[in-house]
Length: 548
Image (spheres, rainbow, N blue to C red):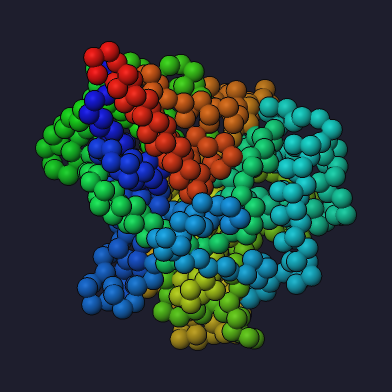
């Protein structure tokens, strides 16, 4: 039966859910958005650091009213970039919100030799490594994967494509073996881009997506302004937002009614609350849909659950260190480098055989706390200097797998202390550390994200997983994972069910722009437009019915 009084319930208050609810409310449709957290934004979360603490929800202190307003240093703990500015819908939206964008000088990168007492890579070598780590991993390997003489096998990974010079010879043209080892060591840090070790990401689909061109920019003062603006638009148009509601079940009651059952997690008794709707949009993260999804009745079909399990859910964690002063600035000119690449401890080993072997291997995932500590003490990290972005003396370390997983296995304060010590020993010459007063003070506030342990995220963003091969030893756990994933899995995950009454959206349902804020935004827009058009068709059928 057509819906005479449409009511849409949106599950999830990340950018996909907020966008869907905002567009529906703007069309005058009765909409209710349910979010399990006590805040909106999901994997968008701007935290404000200050002297002595920050307002994050990761176990650190809250600011006092007297300091928060005067010394606030906003940092996005989740999404922070707009990737590709030409034609990107976020650029137009940034003017309306408004959001400022910062363009850190990507060419301003310092490669730090671990615990070297202020030594960096030779400038000419650093420039070549910087250029070729991008060119080989992205431009050359993507071109080989999508336009080469053969289609990569399902079990081939980005890493195997980089290491296998015989199968993809054009990737390493003009690069000698010694430089290749250095470039591979730096390229392994691109796990922060993919959200997975390069050995886990499918080569067959590397570069398949049609992303927006142009530079990457940093959102200022933080993505929370977009979240707040979206929520205000929903409420102003008559929509309803309810936080601290964990969705337990979604049930089709009849041809035109759906029931959503949620737990009110704001109270100790955690009572259940029911919402009836004509349509439901599920905008929950891929990690939640894989591991702790609501109960659907009727159940999701096998092709949907198998597609969900085939997709990879990546992990990127950040270590934020906020200081009284930017003690790391170049002593010669005081200029800030946008990026400080803290190289792995074994980078440039005097043992050529060891360097050759370790450069061509991807580090294993940590299996216990001791292995996790070793990875954090020795692994490479890309560190963004926020003094080059907004003038604040803040360092943000980006940790992709396997260091990202290690960060969730050790106490956060140990991680902060260890990274601070590594940075001091890597940036400050011994003679400048002679006196106690010359050693840079510890951060005044800090945090370590743990998106994988977050029950409402279960990871950071999606990736396309390679298929398993016999050489892997044992099959990966989970339904469908051994097959690898493809862009078709993302399309499948976004298809509506129950004659269109149950919809889905999120960054993981956009095969061209997955793992991005604009991908989630575009999917929220797509799904809301689908509901609007469906309701128009239903309204037309009512008006055309006999006797009307």
